Length: 503
Image (cartoon, rainbow, N blue to C red; front, side, top):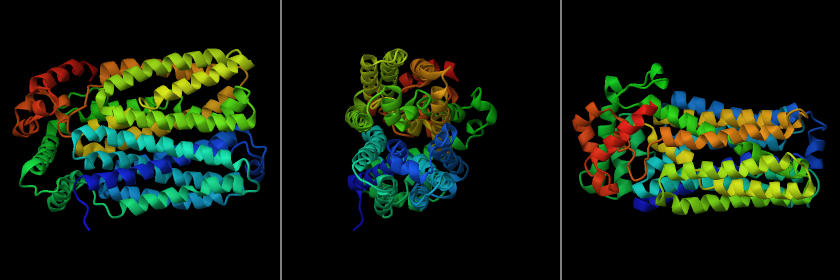
């Protein structure tokens, strides 16, 4: 039976959600086993801080490499194909990791997993966004992917916690190996799905694109919303063919092009990268270590709190999914930056004066930071970056945005523990993360126009030059914006002129 309509989108959400559970599992599973005697015995501890940091963070650097590969060759294969390749690669890397008896083999396994993860995290949000039929559900769908990542991280920490009561090498090998289960589930759900119509049209395959559009809308492309969607996609591609809309290196520094493709990519790169300079991976990779070593809690208590903290993240992510479209992207991000700055400042001040009372209060502040991060900077940066990219360059722009995430995450996960272990730096390391929390809000306010309520093609109107608004292709995109989201063409042009100062 061929799946059509809303069920097709729901299946895409399930496949993408499972793929991001895989990502969350990979990101969190090592954090709960680093201090177990069984893991340390297999890895022939003691290991120095550099080795431990590299083993944990090589996954991030490899994920960056996977994103770069996608940005260079993204259109050679479809969104769906890259996801399938990524999951298969992760299965291979997991087998290598779970059978490790030394740092070298574990490093190799984590590197392979990371490359596959880079493929998946670059393409799953794009795949989900492009399969969305209803504009008001697109942000919720991409947001749900991040919610699933946090569920994966929480599940990994709870499994790690449960394995504390086991014995033998299964204490750490089972949690690492269980990632294969999530990858196999992802493959099972994505295999029957088609690729996105926008990919087919961008590749010059209109017949295939028509077939998928007809399945998405459950009607032919010669009538109703399906016909409008096809015309919008073709109009967007037509605008991107103009010489003045091409991607040029100099525009990444000062974009004067008619569609501001480089500015849009640059904004996504800074936004997503910034979300990982605020301490995200440092907190979640070393959650148990932070509670146990730096706050001074007992090992079992630290492990349990780490599981609880990642559960808070998952719950607040899901709350964000429910209310995603109630507020604009800008309000979520600016409000999140303010809340995160307050709680991280309190956390930093408290751990600067170690003690039982201040340690408990610091843990509470960390929980509050996570609760604010969960529905804001955790998912909304992905949503925004997946929306603002022009169609022809979407694989490049989003992959580069996610690659910046992995670079910044690598820097923090690798260098953070080394800095904290240095007695001359110690708790002051958190000031670095606090600075970026504070800077995040102004960046969004001045550089990120609102995208809520517009189709992926209509977002071109926010960034295009005034001269291009007179073209037939632009007029096609303006067909029903006012009726869809209450914004007139004049209001969109006004938004563009206001934001032009950020070029």
